[in-house]
Image 1 (tube, each protein chain N blue to C red):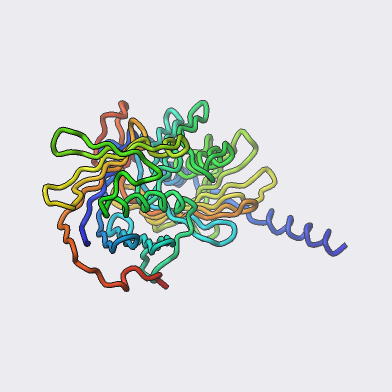
Image 2 (cartoon, rainbow over the protein chains, first blue to last red; image 1 turned 135 degrees about the vertical axis):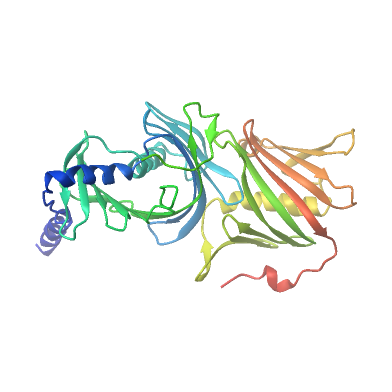
Length: 228
Length: 167
């Protein structure tokens, strides 16, 4: 009986997380949409991050991640390598997922798909906005409904830092992404992703290099500016 | 031996190599400290049979428990062999010396399982006897790591405390 009550209580508490949106006045709506839109990439970028990964058992691993992301075509090319330059994972995702290279324990479709989903969550606009407004603390919020029934909240604070929250169809939090204030290139220097549930893990990413890509990926601009 | 090094990672996904820099400290036969100062401050210490990697943070050292440490152990074993001038007596690789100068040494994995990770390694000796100038590790046709050594000091006798586990 106590076990049933425990699970019921857990379910209620985990559903309680989705924030309430206060409608904004029409004049503010365009500002809110612009703020939410600026969180995501609007053109192709190549990004290099140092990544601290905290595993379910609390141990930490450190790698370097390289991501070439094209939000218009929905394509991602991702590489994970050791600090010494040994490539442990490389894959491309677009219409299909193609694993190019994977060493254990990164050699599973589940890992590859999960990685690509996390990259999409952080860098790609989640789809059409369902509604927008304000939170009680004055932050801007945009809520997106995904075809799979999940919801994504994008929350932009007054200091320009932002959060992305992914919920399942029952409003249970699945992922939270927090970013530092964007630098002068328009990209956050630090991003923290937390996966809630099984498996639970967190990623702390620090930007090492960024490069805006032109339509032909072999020609790139090193201006490092993110278009708004 | 002590040395500065520059490491350049070349990959198709990168329009220009990813550059890392650091220092190498080595005591024959199998004691090595591979320290990166940029872009990620980290220290890899090999002391005979043990290998540890640490990340340097503002708050101190964090032990890195990445599983790819096992693969690095294989590479470090090879590197300590090369630093000792042992290229042929190498269970993991066959060694071939190029006849034309400067006489590069080409190492090819013996086992297919290793060749999936590293396709070949090219070692370029320096004009100074006993010194390696450059190592290129080819993972595939479009991915390689080039490590260039400079300010090499032989018989420098680094302090043993550099190779102790960090807390």
